[in-house]
Image (cartoon, rainbow, N blue to C red; front, side, top):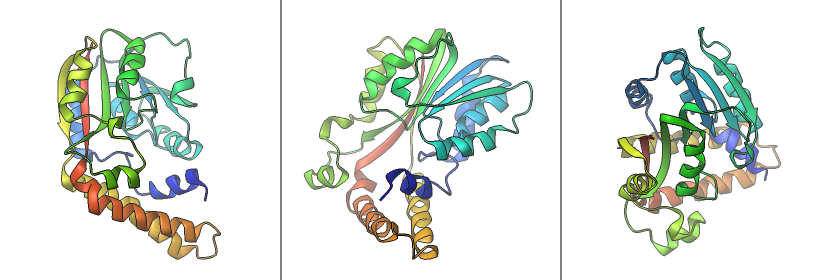
Length: 245
């Protein structure tokens, strides 16, 4: 089964590929207080919805980076109607490989796209892109409670992949960042996120029974739903954090 294809289908109905409600997202963006014409970098921009909302609100100039051609295609469509003076450039590239000489930014974002190097390593990389006095907007998972060994095995992640919500805040402060705001996704946000994810795959499988990948996709989403309901819903949280340099 093509994992990239599965992911693109699963996120069909999502505006943002993280469990964040649109209303809360807009409230968070309002807190940024960016100057008109600010420069914004979104590492792992996905469909570009968060970047679109930030650029439109502040008339900002953005750069989006993502490795997924399917998600970037949707980002281009969403961002094509940006009102002036906002502008955007998108790059199809892995976050780890992005090293363009673009100077520094007023805001650097990574919401739900932390690479394998981990949260603290990503913060260090993001800091290098931020101008003095600029901000970081980061979304990352955390353990809401101690994960069961069965969950870790089924989820396919080691225990130290995440810390707690407090660890995410304090870890940034230990790097000299100022904690400006922190919020956690609610159970309703998680249910809506996971529900849309599963529904999109189930809908695709039902509509494409002749797809050679359909049986594997059906098995994967069935197992994923079980993992979420049995363990993940009560164990894995998601925090969104605003830090200043």
